[in-house]
Structure formats: structure tokens, C-alpha cells
Length: 100
Image 1 (cartoon, rainbow, N blue to C red):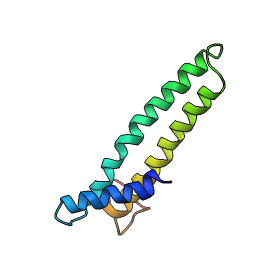
Image 2: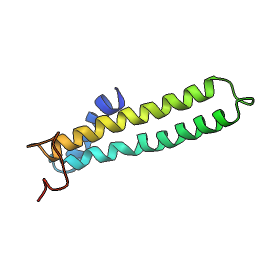
Image 3: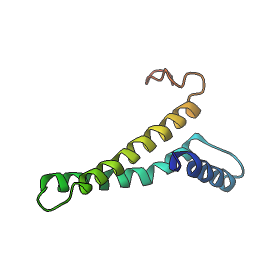
Image 4: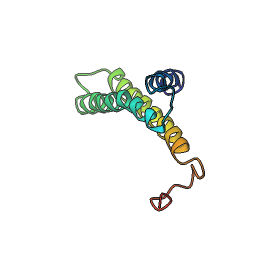
């Protein structure tokens, strides 16, 4: 996926340069802003077009759902990468008690 992959890497490199060359796992969280906004908008388009099918073509709910799925997949990729960098010893075995 282009946004979470290529663009996300370029964004993280830029943030690391601004932080004197130090990369922090929290730099991934900035990339969640755009998928968060598009997810809300996609669900709103889907909900309105599905509620009033006589006003909208079949393309509107499909487009809204597609935008929402873009948001969902991007969020999953970004948060998984964040978790793998934030907890390098056990990225797949996170529980709230592994920190302490």
C-alpha cells in the first residue's frame, strides 16, 4: 500500500531528520491522521448513500466503503509497524503487563 509504505517511510525519514537524525517509534503515529479523517468521511458517505438509495447511485456506497477500507488497511499497517518498533522483544505478544 502506497500511503502506509512508501509515503510513510518518506514521512518518517523527514521526521527523523528534524529530530537530529534520531528515529522514534512515535513518528509512525503522525501517519495515522490522514487515515483517521478519510475513515470517518468514507463511513459518512457510505451511511448516507445507503440510507437514501433512491438519491444515490450504487457507486456512492461502494466508493464510501472503498475509502473506509483504505483507512482500515493503512491503520493496521501503521500500528503494526509502530508496535514492532516500540516493543522489539515481543512485537506479537503485547499485553499491558509486558511494559512493567
